[in-house]
Length: 250
Image (tube, rainbow, N blue to C red; front, side, top):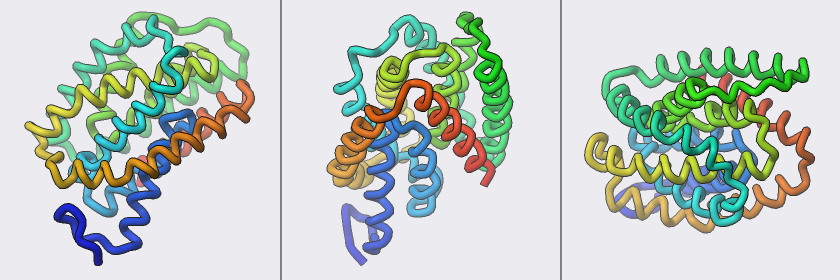
């Protein structure tokens, strides 16, 4: 066993933590959906709410890498629509996190994402060119994104559905998502500190130790995405979103 910032970790557990960091970095720079495998792994090590406190600083560090590389590709037209309802969603998610069973929440969100994914696949296969660029749709997706990012860090699938529905090009999709998650994850910090008490100095330092593996994952994600064609990238994200929704059921 290894004593690290108040945590007793075996070498296999520490390896899992660094693997999670690698997945988070890779997901933030374009291989979206990979982070869904990281969430349950971290929950196995630390438990549900405690793992979210370790995960959040890791996510923010990975967001900074993504924004640094893709910042010029962000589409602020969509971001401005998303931010207000996403902030409200964080408030709701903080409240729900204290009263709702985590598995029930994951099951409900899985059903919602499956239904939305089915609609998006119908649009994709039918070559529908009409884009649901309505304010109510952006507000709904922002609200769901805020709630799901607070409970279980599950917002990646929600944002994938929204941004793919807007038919953003590959780099624009990644850049817009990068700015959204950096802003919303920074906004979440006070709620973790003062409401859930899931972040303290020890958990923060444990997250910081994983920084080299986040950086390696981010570098890997950038180089993987460069080699994927636009049309193939859309289907990669769609398939990963479907896989993530299945994982939510377990």
